[in-house]
Image (cartoon, rainbow over all chains, first blue to last red; front, side, top):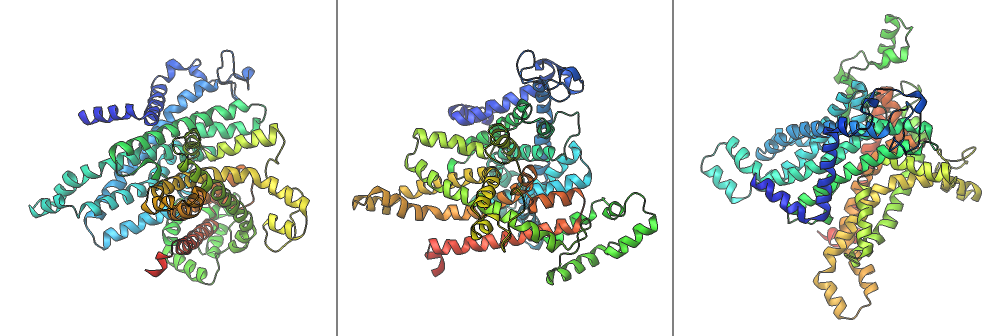
Length: 287
Length: 315
C-alpha cells in the first residue's frame, strides 16, 4: 500500500503522467457510471428512426447515428467494452508471457531456446495480421478479438522478462540465494520476480494503449463486437457511408480512442521515469 | 516462421474447400476438389510439399482468383512498394530535421509542441486519421482524390511505380495525378513512423550534444551549424538507423489497414481480402513476402550502419 501511495505521489509531480492517470480514471468512471451519465441510456439498443443523423447540439451533445441513437450515450457504454478488451487481453498476455520469460531466462537449455524462437516468430509477423487471421477464423465476436489479442501480445512480455531475468542471474544477490540452497521456485518467485516488476508494470500500461488501438482496428474491419454493441472502432466504420455530411458520427469515437490510448501512453512514460530512472523518457521504443 | 504460420492457418476450423465449391456442391465434389488441392494429405506432408514448391519459387495457386500467388503478389507489389517507400521517405526527411531542431532548442515552445505531435502519433488510430483526412481534403475541400492510385488507365512502363513510370514517359499530368492520389495514404501511413523517428533522433542528439568532442569543437570555434548538422547528426543517427529497421514493421502492418481505407490496390489490401476468404496459399504468400522484406530491410540497416559508423566494419 505504501508503494502505491509513493507511486501516486510521484505521479502527481509529473504533469503529463498525471494527465494520463486522470484520462484513464475518467475512462473507468465513465464505464462504471455509464447508465447514470448517459442522457439516453437505452439508446444502446433502442432505435429512433425519426432522429437519424442529427448534428450535435440540443439534447444530443454529440449528435445521433444512423439508427437515431445518441452517440454520446453509446460512447459511454463503449468505454465498458474498451476496458474489458484491454484488461482481459493484457491480463492473459501477462499470465502467458511472464512465466515463459522467467523460466526461459532462468533455465538455459534447448527448451528455453525453443520458447524464445517461437516468441521471435510472433514478433516478426505484424501483430495486426496475425490477430486478423485468428479473429477471422474463429468468427467475428468480442471474445474472439480478446483471444486473438492475447495470443499475439504475450511475446512482448516474454522478451522483456527474459532479457531482465538473464541479466539478473549475474547479480550477486541471486548467486548467493542459489548458493544458500534456495530452490529454483524460491529464487524465481521471491528474488527475480520482484526485480522485474517495474518494467512489467510500464509495459502493461503501454500495452493497454496498444491493445485498445489494435482492438479498435479489428472492430473497424468488422471482426469485433457485432451490432448493436457500441464498439468504438465499429462505430467509425458504420459512419463511413454517411460522410461527409454526418462528420460528427466519425469524429467522436475516433477522439475517444485517441484520448484513451494517449492516457495509457502518457502514464506508461511517466511510470518508466519513476520506476526506472536509468532510462530516459525520450529513448523509449514502441509498444 | 513459415512452419508456424502454416500450422496456425491450417489447424483453424474454417474449411475453404467447402467455400470454394459453393453451397450446391455435393459431398463427392467437395472431396474431389480437396484431393485436387492436396488438402486431403496429412499436415506434415502438406508442409513438406509447400517447402519443396517454395524452393522452386512457387507459392501455390490462390483458391479464389485461381491464379498463381506469385502472379497475384507481383501485380500488387509495386503499389505497396510505392506507398511504403513514400511513407518511409516522408518520415525520415521530415522526422530527422525536426528531431534535431527539438533537441537543439530543448524545452522551448517548439520542443513542447512537437512532443504533443509525437505523443499523438503513437496514440491515433491510423484508419481514423485516414478517414478524417479523406473527410477534410477530399470531401470538404476537394483538393485530393478520395481513393485509388490514378484516374483513368494506369500508365505503361516497366516498374509499376506510377510516379516513376509517368515521369519517365514525360507525362507530367499523369505524374501530378498519381502524386495527388498518393498524398493522403502516405501521410496517414507515415504519421506514427514520423513520431518514432523524431523521438529517437531527439534522444540521440541529446546524448551526443553533451559529449567531450562536441565541447572541443565548440572551443575550437566551429560554427554551431556545422557542429550540429555534420558532427552531432552523424553520431546521433546510429540509433535512428536501427529504428528504421523496426519502423518498417510498423509501416508493413499499417498497409493492411490503410490500403483498405484508401482502396489502394496493394499487398496489404490483398492480405486482408485473403484472410476474409480463408485463402491459405494467399495468406502464406503474404507471410513469406513480409518475412523476406523484413530480412532485406535488416540487411540494409546493417550496411547503412557500417557506412555511418566505420568502427563497425573494422571489428
